Image (tube, rainbow, N blue to C red; front, top):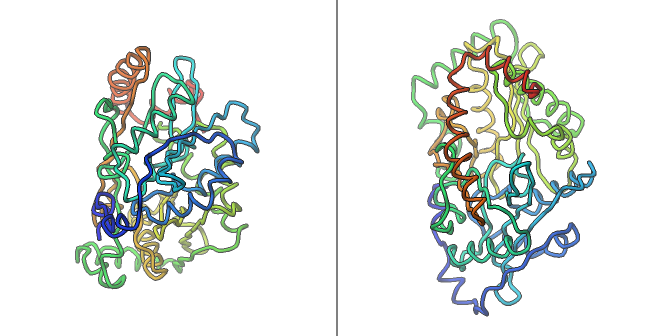
Length: 400
């Protein structure tokens, strides 16, 4: 089954619905770590019925965010976990937090600076439109704001299906490549679908590298090794962003490195870390998460002095093979679409940004900034030479 079908198909609804009695939907809000812990067994049960990529709406992600904000003493952390119950049965969770900027107050997904997908957990027997509406209203009542900003919502997801008709489309449409391994009997069956020329080019690239030294791919297991790899990938990614004169929400947050380091030893998330060495030195490295039998790529870096050999592509091939051998359903490669990802993707999910104003001020700010000014400014900056962008970034104080 493809990820798009999994996101949109109400699988088992009739079977499970025959066993379920509806008592009416009631929404409420949890705002403390203790409240999250009290939901834990039912939250995990709800995750098991979900068919979409929901790592960033999982209990493990929520606990990691709460632990990080507590560790750094963030007194501005303002979680808003909207829940939906049908009688005593938990049927929906929308993990949000309230943030304040100089211009406005917004509700955003929990851990918004570090998350890669906005979505909602909804039981397959529950109507998405009704559930999302109730969850959003509960969050707004509990934490008044100028609006709700939902970035990187995937078409066909529960959140997309339940999105209110009043939502404003913001930003630019993106794509998230995905490798559906469960569509194939084994890795060899999947790999045979990749273009013959591409496979030949990868073999030739690997052979060229091996003529000057051994190429070794490994999946790291020891926490100390994983932490060291995380640090290297963050350094590599930050250096690359600086060279290109670019930045990101995650790297603009001074706590991003500490957050990632905490994940390496967190009991609530499963990390996979992959390293490809050439002559004993890192050629390409990547790490991410395993959740719901899927791998989520998170941060990667590579040695750009070997760009002709496409080290990122060579490593991604090995990562997908490792995931297939582990029996995972697929690999979520995340936004943006990039040529080396598209080489392996079985499909690419359309990703959109949405805004829901809850006040006249919120509507005005969304229209002025998110719809008009910010996209225009971004286009103008990206049109500049990379060196000039880098200089402007340093002047703005966003260098890494």
